[in-house]
Length: 203
Image (cartoon, rainbow, N blue to C red; front, side, top):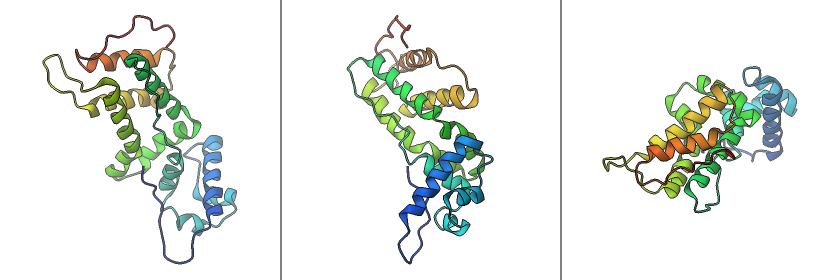
């Protein structure tokens, strides 16, 4: 996704400051969580002044958002040709991304702190675009039982929304989760989708 970094004319930015600030953010998210992570504490940990932080990021939310998504959260799977197995692997990759401590700590607070709906939508925008492309590659062109095309975004919403609810909102168990969600998505994709495997024990 697009980094929310503020650019100003003048001398080039010192990349060591950027790196120090990013490390401080990740450390604080893991130690104290999003709500107790402050720009003041980030600056202190990074051994830089507050103005150095605000010259680069306009708010704590934008700083955390940039740091959190510096590492691509969208899993890239290697297709095996087994549609259900590929879908399970994709879902497991999303689960792993959401279970990363910084993501679990920051995502609920980010959704609250970013007031602009376009910014809130952008939090998962890159992830959703990547997943949509991969779902189309795995499932083909999904249709309903009466031959009406299924909006791929709807399937992405099912995948991301269900994982977000299970991992972030509820913090529930993910044992067997990927296989069950894969079966739901395959069923929703219509009659052209492959039948779900009866053996779910390993997933």
